[in-house]
Amino acid sequence: MFGLQICLRRLRQRLTNGPWRYDSWMHLYRGASWSAGATHKSRDSSDERAWPNACDVLVVGGGAVGSSVAYHLKERAREDLSVIVVEQDSTYKTASTVLSLGNIREQFSVAENIQLSMYSRRFLRQVPELLSVEGSDPVDVQFTPQGYLFVTHEEGLKQMQENFKLQTSLGAKVEWLWSRQLQQRFPWLRLGKVVAGIIGDYGNEGFFDPWALLMGLRRKAEWLGARYLDGRVTDLIHRQQATPATGHTPPRILTTAQITVRSGEKRDIQFSTLVVAAGAWSGALGRMAGLGCGTGFLATPIPVEPRKRNIFCVHAPHGPWKDCPIFNDYTGLYFRPDRSGQLYIIGMSPSEDKEPPADDLQVDYQFFDTDMWPILAERVPAFENLKVRSAWAGFYDYNTLDQNLIVGFHPVYKNMCLATGFSGHGIQQSPAVGRAVMEYILDGKSHSINLERFGFDRILANQPIKEMMVM
Ligand SMILES: Cc1cc2nc3c(=O)[nH]c(=O)nc-3n(C[C@H](O)[C@H](O)[C@H](O)COP(=O)(O)OP(=O)(O)OC[C@H]3O[C@@H](n4cnc5c(N)ncnc54)[C@H](O)[C@@H]3O)c2cc1C
Image (cartoon, rainbow, N blue to C red; front, side):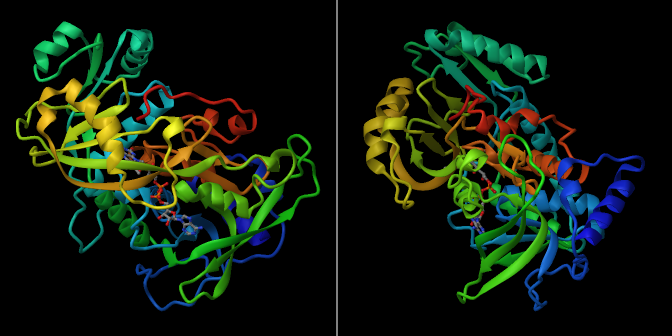
């Protein structure tokens, strides 16, 4: 592995063009070189090349986050870094990415979340150039500008005012509306206890096609030389370091992933860095490394699990409302028009005590009838006559501590970089988080946006960063 260390060092020198920093995990690498097979000249991952036995970076999960990581790494490091993405289901039928709504907003209560979305929005606008591949049609993520409207009752007013202050201080284009202004602008709303709202700029917020983004990222990452493998990571092998790390848990290095392929055969890949981008299944991946099963720091799991969320697509005969924003009620209910403007897409997270089991993706129509429809009909009388046309369910990659991303290197597993736990706002953060992980791996820290607070240390310290605007 020593050869690899030198290779990464040279790469960093080239990339930073000057003196570069060593971070703690770099010093841990000593051993055999595995440069063989480290560069990928072919641009086709579905080829007959031999199963690789080693790589520099192994990304577990080829959804939007994993693919964004692969794209950003290869875009910057090119042939100097070998990147393999392992994806257990290349149809992506249960991946959160393809089941998400693809909404993007600047309205958050935590500064980093605003900054992440701002970068992602710029990225989405530039997708045709950034993700272009010679000889192929440009990617069209169908970005549809549509402002978000968040409304609050009296109890949430102070928080909303703080959010507004933060958003404007960071350059978000948002407008404050008191109830009278809300009523004038959106006469189809029945305000009830609503006292105020914030509306976002129609150019800066909106929605896009997550599948197109995923395919665009994946295609470009592969074109740049990243290799995608069909298979499921079923075990992670580590070795322990002699020197003590933070606290009393000695540091560890993950060395090898065991991958089970469709035939049931098990194959190993060694790596220098592992990226956890397994979405809702990240907690399960962590358990393969003993996280949540050991003592000391190892007693703390990656606190990410699947949580089922239902989305309903309805026709409301007395709509559509041309000016309908992406509406977010203080009860947690949200809706927006679809691209045709004829149908409305509606969702709501259940309260903690009503969380359904996450063992299947069956739609819970009863939840719509008992919990969502009464709020809908109350807030928008024209929804009284709606008809549900279709519905689907997907898994949130739910961070049980604070419903926010976890990003950066693990304090014990020094070469395990996390990119998970987005809990309902991950598709919009995927471009920015891919860049952040690239910076962690190549530069030792995320410098474009400082994401230090979002590392695993807050999980160990049990210090949530509460995002007040999660849906
Ligand atoms: C109904 C719904 C609506 C949403 N709406 C929005 C929205 O409007 N805006 C927004 O920003 N976000 C939204 N989200 C959240 C967003 O979809 C996710 O946060 C985001 O897609 C996470 O991307 P990911 O790549 O981490 O996860 P995924 O897309 O789930 O990808 C993870 C991949 O890892 C693979 N994997 C897991 N374990 C292994 C293993 N052991 N070996 C190999 N592969 C493995 C899986 O097969 C999967 O493909 C929504 C989510 C849902 C469910």
